[in-house]
Amino acid sequence: MVALDEKVTKPQYSDEDHATWAALCARQSALVAGVACAEYREGFPALGLDMNRLPDPDVISARLYTLTGWTLGDAQNEYLGPTEWFEHLAERRFPVTNYIRRPHELDFTPLPDLFHEYFGHLAFFTGQHFADTAQMFGQLYLSAQNERQRLEIARLWWFTTEFGLIREGDALKIYGAGLFSSPGELAHALSPDTPKYPFDIRKVADTPGAAYSMHPAYFILDDPGHTRRIIRDYARMEGLPVPQ
Ligand SMILES: [Fe+2]
Image 1 (cartoon, rainbow, N blue to C red):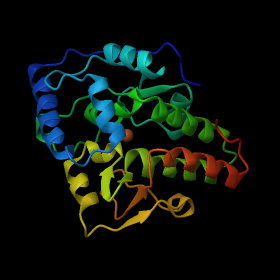
Image 2 (image 1 turned 45 degrees about the vertical axis):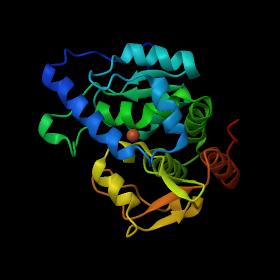
Image 3 (image 1 turned 60 degrees about the vertical axis):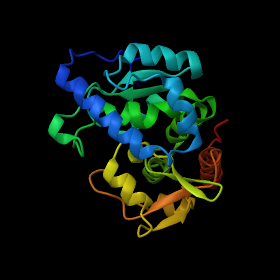
Image 4 (image 1 turned 120 degrees about the vertical axis):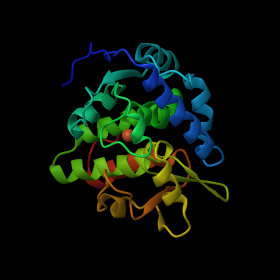
């Protein structure tokens, strides 16, 4: 299990680092306006990010704790293994790095980057419904009995919270953090030429995620409660304890 007392270490950021953050925020805010889903639109102001200065993890962690009982954990600037990742979630802790990409990497960074985490993910964690759903994902993963189930649950997480799309009336909005933080993949996902399918648990469970290239297709959630239904339906299908 992961340590409970970990805090995100805070480097001394340079003016150049703050400028990179500000440039990313300005560009992505313009791109996601109009296509962000309701949970993000409502959650982003509550997160209270300063669009010109890199966030202080202690301040954001305290804010999340007040709002939904979540805190930030330390991802130690690496991609965590899935078990460690879902252990954090089960304990209502979202792992973040403190690394900000270099100025020439605005479009893509191969390393985990705090812009993705703060700008893409954390708005969702200001809302109790999503925050509780994310914890259920952790509980589901930790209850899995074999590697097949663990792989499939990680894919369900991936194609909802990282790269999901969601229906809002007649419109298609973005739900996944990877789409909020990546200008290229956002445009690709919303392109009429890119295949999009209704979210089918078995189909998604058989679809590999792509960490270093764009996905050939995306899956569409019906409403904000759909992610929670997916978790519970998968648990029932597999005879696992149903997270409550
Ligand atoms: Fe992510």
